[in-house]
Image (cartoon, rainbow, N blue to C red; front, side):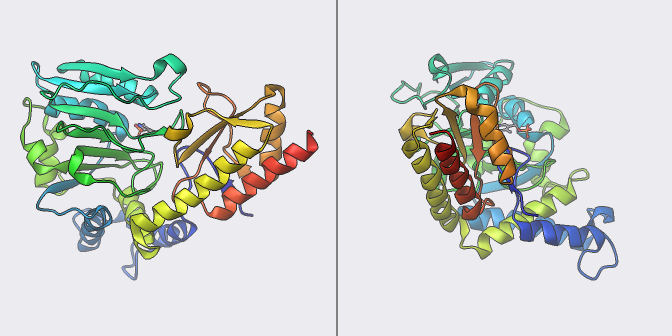
Length: 357
Ligand SMILES: *Cc1c(COP(=O)(O)O)cnc(C)c1O
């Protein structure tokens, strides 16, 4: 039975990826060994790590001369403090744009290491838009952004015009659209939204930016430790990296990031189109800031909320319940969500309209 998985994370992965991963959990190629039991020093696993790294460069159109690509543990949440610990000196200034729960957490951690300040926030309206037109201190070490706000369904459509490099949490949108990479000092993304299973975090660092470290830090929390050892200083999370590598192979096979973006625009257009057309529903995010990945919407008559969720479940659309801080519904339509899944959800909305007319 096909269930369409609209959960925000851990989230849907391409079926082909899960099929291949299942096979390799039993035996990787014809090695006679499961990938789960293989040494991270074996040539097979080294090849997986190499392909994973090379795929990141290829998909983002960046070069190994300019960027380091790391696969770390501790989730995106550890990057909240690790970025500041490594890059924000006690007397240095960093700006944080507060666009929701994840940015707030990142800011809170950074405040422990240096002079972090929230330079713009959309908290006043429960984070339903992306702030614009704020002043940026050009002397800042970096500007921290959460480019896609998984909980509130907003997304930066354009990025601030400044020379200050960005440290950007792209957990819920990595590889979903083409971006100008030159603005980013560091990008990090927990895999479990749009890339792979939980357990690995992708970190991409501009070498010039990353060279300016702020202090001495414990070995495991020092990015350069992992740069020097190609993410294998200690035992890396081989299986999550392997599955992420398969997902990137899948993205490449299906036309790369630009093709993902075209598909994502189409899917998001379909769903937002129905939210705007259907008199029972309304979207929560400001239209110009709507996320292509996490679509948040409500019923005008909230007493019907449970009824709509059962209708979704009956149609095998699962994970549509909204986050408690927004309520209503959230459909996460990451790269791996087929258009048929979005169409299915739209059909449920139409039927619900007829049933409740
Ligand atoms: C899920 C999420 C996180 C937290 O990720 P973990 O890997 O669980 O720490 C951080 N930022 C964003 C934008 C997220 O969507």
